[in-house]
Structure formats: structure tokens, C-alpha cells
Length: 153
Length: 132
Image 1 (cartoon, helix red, strand yellow):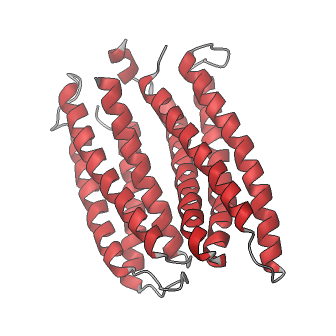
Image 2 (cartoon, chains in turn cyan, purple; image 1 turned 180 degrees about the vertical axis):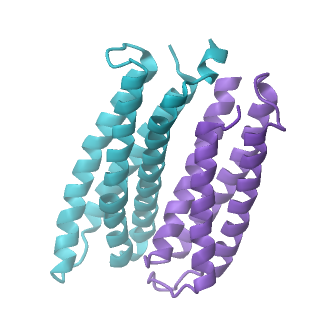
């Protein structure tokens, strides 16, 4: 079984690359957002809070789209669309739940950026809520990486 | 054992990617905060060490792979190129005291984008495994 898992048809490589590349951009942008928001907790730095929200919009969102498109592509190549395999379920669960939290974070971030653009101060409460949401998404994706690589049954 | 090693190898690659994304924000004119830069360096360092150690361990663990396979040697060379570029980029970016963007010289920028290039090439080699 393990040997079979190592041998992959060549036409699965591109969808797999797209899936992993998107996931790396997504996780990288989420990490940047979380780290910037945590760093801004003490200082209340508007530039760091803005960077965090921009990284969600310009990094995490496009990364998610590429990652999810790659996932659907490889699932169709492997004929696993109607599969009840546990690791696929974990992957979809983390992906869907993560997307929901990402959208909520983007809405909160968008409101905060709009407020900053009008000369207002960034909301510390919003920044902390988004820090929590983004951290939760990162934990979910850590579980997804574990599921994708160990393929629990 | 194989799955645990693969998980740690891939997780390390995600650490590398996260470090690269943070550094890319600096290169694109984002604010350079001291804590953010330290975390980027830690992610890059831990990820780099993890990908190499667990990658070599994986190659030794699987009878299908040999450490001297062309694609594995290529990956190790690319890893060293990415690490070298990353070291140059890391030295050239210093945190601003007021969380503002910093001026980054051309050499450092080239080193950073070369690191991105080597990393993407490394990912391509890992997925396609040419010659395997």
C-alpha cells in the first residue's frame, strides 16, 4: 500500500503542484497576518495591522482559490470525488471551515482598513478577534497537512 | 515511520514557505518589525533544517529511493542555493524601530527573489521527481 502511494501517475503532478503551491501561499499569508497582528498588540501599530489585513486579502484569499482549485483538480484525477475516505473528509472539513473563518476575518479587516483610510484608529478588539480566527485557521490547516501526508483511514 | 517522516518533511516545507512570504512582504515595501523578522528567520531556519534532515531520512528510509538519485541530488543543490540566497537576504534587511518600511538595497532584493526562485524550483523537483 505504501509503495503504491509513492508511485503517482505523471498527469497528477501538475494538479498536485498547484494544490501545494496554493496551500503554501495561503499558510504563509495567514502566518504573516497572525504574526503582524500579535506584534501590533502592544504598540497598536496601524502599519502592522494594515499589513495583516492586506496579507489576508492579497495573499491568503488568492492562495486559497489556487489551493482549492488544485484540490478539486487532483480529486477528479484520482476519481475520489465521491469518496468517504477519512483523510479527504478531514481535508475538506479544514478547507471549508477555514474559508468561512477567512471570509469573516476579511470582512472585519475590510471594515478596519476602511476606518483607517478615513483617518481613524485601527480597532484593537477587531485585531484581536482576527488574530484568534487566523490562528484557528492555521491550526486547522496543520491538521489538514497531517491528514494529507499520513492519510489516516 | 514513512508517514511520520513525510509529515515532518512537508511541515518543514510549510515553515520555509511562511518565512519566504514574510520576507516577501518586507521586499515589497511592507513594515519591518523586529519580532516579525525574528519569526521569519526562525521559520526559515527550522524549515530549512527540517526539510533537509527529514528529506534525507525519507530517502534512506524508502527502498525505492537512493540518496544519490539525480532528483535528490538536484533537490539538495537547490536547497543549498536557496539557503545561501536566504542568508544574504536576511543580513541585508534590518528592522525599523517604528514598524515602518525600510529601504532595501538592490543586492538584497535580488538575493531574496533568487531564494523564492530556488524554492519554487525545489518544489517542482519534489513533485515531479524527474528520473525517479
